Amino acid sequence: MSLTATYCLYCCRELRFGRCDYSLCCPCDCNLFMLEGSSSRSEPSIRFAGRRKSVFAETYDPEEDDDDDDGAKLVYPKSDEQRQRLATAVKNILLFRSLDKDQMNDVLDAMFERVVKKDELVIKQGDDGDNFYVIQSGTFHVFVAPDPSKEPNHIHTYENSGSFGELALLYNMPRAATVKANSEGSLWAMDRQTFRRIVLKSAFKKRKMYEALIESVPMLKTLQPYERMNLADALVPRVFYDGDRIIKQGDAADGMYFVEQGEVAISVLDDSGKEVEINRISKGGYFGELALVTHRPRAASAYCDGEVRCAFLDVEAFERLLGPCMEIMKRNITDYEEQMLKIFGSKQNIRDIR
Image 1 (cartoon, rainbow, N blue to C red):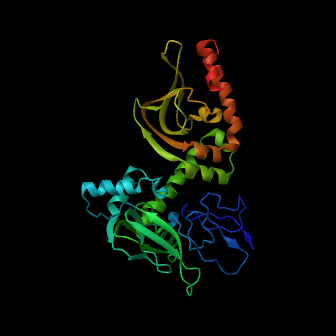
Image 2 (image 1 turned 60 degrees about the horizontal axis):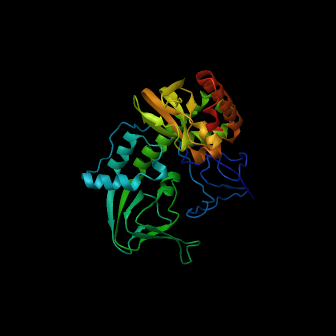
Image 3 (image 1 turned 60 degrees about the vertical axis):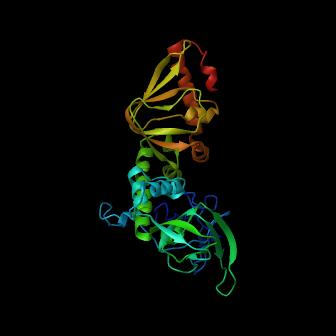
């Protein structure tokens, strides 16, 4: 029996067996495993501290989902205070990271509050999945029974934050664990249909959009197809407006940017402290990578000329995904030095980027 990588459903790809084994995990880096070489599929388990293993489920293909995104949407009335509490609870959930402002508003509209009592079962292992839950308050214990005839094991505890229940909705499978309230508490819930429409279809559309963007960036043509897919999933949309400063010279670097729409002016400070424009970057271009390559502060500032839409790649994802492009980016340092030399006539400011 061998472990073979497959696309995960969260990333909205069909299950495909027999793909190359990249670090024994899914090419999209979602930590899903598939056991192959047996006529039966292994049962799923939930990942908390380790990797999720042996996941199998029927395929959900957003490209073949003809549901109208603009049809009737669920709206559960909330007070301003409730909406603010919910926004705080969901803002750091990875599943919602790729959603734009309108989609996040759909999430907030579609979630309803569920108040639970101590010892109440929120979900039960083996049941069909109905809702995805975000914890607003309370303590919740997670139990997994390795066998129906055995006592379940306590494997995790949530304290006033966290989310659960997505696995059964993502993979159209029975609940893989039991979650029980250990105190009175409050949850925000979203039903299966709304969850899939907002989360899965938006992830699929985001990937297709960013795959097209990646195709337009010459440097990224050196990446393998699965590496481009990983990169598309890691990019986060950012919108800026005319005159906004995207990055500031001298600041620590937190990531790099790919321009989707609009134009960005790059400037540096001269000896008198005056900013001098040295370059302009438009669709398909990128900036902010030099500080990540050199591990030094930002060597220039970037300003919006009109509205600008960018795809942001944080420093951790940069180091993990863009290794194959590193030599190209190092050559960009030389190009930058030549630009500075033409403008200032010396290398006085250039040493700061090495």
